[in-house]
Image 1 (cartoon, rainbow, N blue to C red):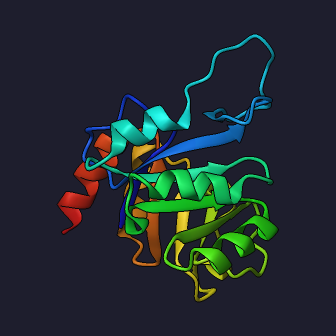
Image 2: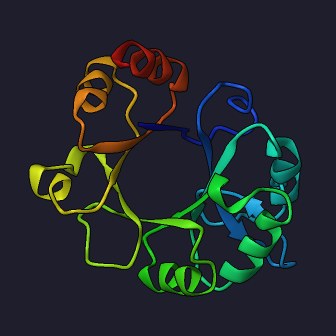
Length: 181
């Protein structure tokens, strides 16, 4: 069971989680920054390079790609500091996942959609509200996001079909994972 801290930078860097999830976009100057929503003018954003430096040797990165067009630049930058086994790229953009898998076959990719569609992604990253037995029995590993409720988290961690849990409460998920083993 993989635990990924949702929007975990910088708070969860040393949490013991397997990954921290960061949402990435490219700004008008071509700099890759952390942002979930569309970038706003005159606002300052954390740059990816800062996160890469901080995460190096401490924790894996789940890069949630929010827009297409800079997939290769994103991976080239990340792979200069983080080994491929500690990088995961998730996105709802199937074409981006295909490009990444073709060029970087050792980087794990996950398709994030409310309802999963066929793709060459390594796993499905699904909203907890929409996970069902069909998804869990699809033959692909499933990561579930964003699970913060203790009872829901406990149920999902106990389900052997769940490969990863994305949460704002990695401390809670890690304690439950430890208790399970």
